[in-house]
Amino acid sequence: MSDESTGRIVIVPTPIGNLGDITLRALEVLSEADRIACEDTRHSKPLLARHDITGKPLVALHDHNEARRAPELVEAARQGETIALISDAGMPGISDPGYRLIQACIESGTPVEVLPGPSAVITALIGSGLPCHAFRFGGFLSVKSGKRRSALEASLESGETGIFFESPHRIVSTLRILEEIDPDARACVARELTKKFETYHRGTAAELHAHFQQHAPKGEIVLLVHAR
Image 1 (tube, rainbow, N blue to C red):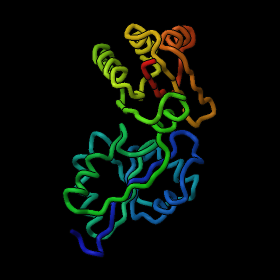
Image 2 (image 1 turned 90 degrees about the horizontal axis):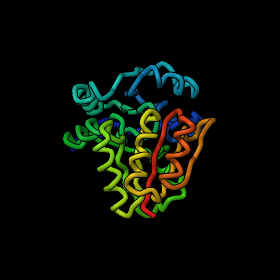
Image 3 (image 1 turned 45 degrees about the horizontal axis):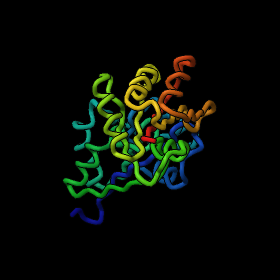
Image 4 (image 1 turned 90 degrees about the vertical axis):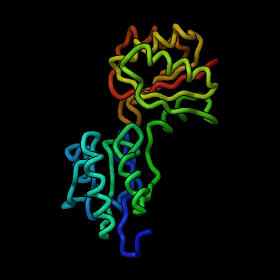
């Protein structure tokens, strides 16, 4: 294990839409961090500026450089730095960069701390009205229709509420597939969560497919499904 002078990596969730949805503890960590690793530094600057967190060194940590940059950040933490990791929205590591950095911390014995905070997965689950005692998160659905069908079939067969991220450009196609599998399956399309135009559309697979065929959706979408 590392000695007492070692710093740490702190995983800091950020708002999924409304910039006011950030915890006091998250702001404290970001204010005190020696540097902040961001999925996209351009995206993170407005959030940091809103809370008067300026002058901090920002480093990019995204899918294309995480494996290369993780050892550098771990070494900086072992030299005493406190490094905060944020993604563009929500909890780092959930369909966002962070997994490789956390693994590097664990393997090297570098302290890693995870703060609680906003998550589109949990927000959508509670707002959907679908059973929340057992659920499974499948991340982004595949662009390939066959893999999407397999994921939806497995979710419905599990008896748990399935939660997926989906593109507005594919949601109609995905709902068509869901209707073909089970037109009576319960579903919810949660859109633009915590933002001004947040909506929850709840109904059967057939009902939601019919609705979105007539009303093209926009924005970020979470799809939830449950067998009736």
